[in-house]
Image (cartoon, rainbow, N blue to C red; front, side, top):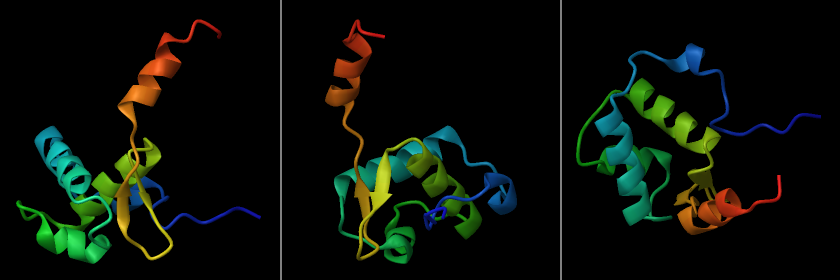
Length: 95
């Protein structure tokens, strides 16, 4: 049985507009600064720059697919990216 992730979906189905890079970075930075403080809708309403709901969902799906964020059991958005750990793996000579 396949597990269902709330944000895992075909991005072709939800793309209404392609987000600009500065918008993706703004959302990622906001999530990092407010780690675990907001649920998805609260996060959307608290962003410093307003955007369409579809654009927001595309950004969240992208961040989940790239292991930058996760959703905990109480539906709070959590920043999980660890650049130091990623750098250790990239520097590892064992392939």
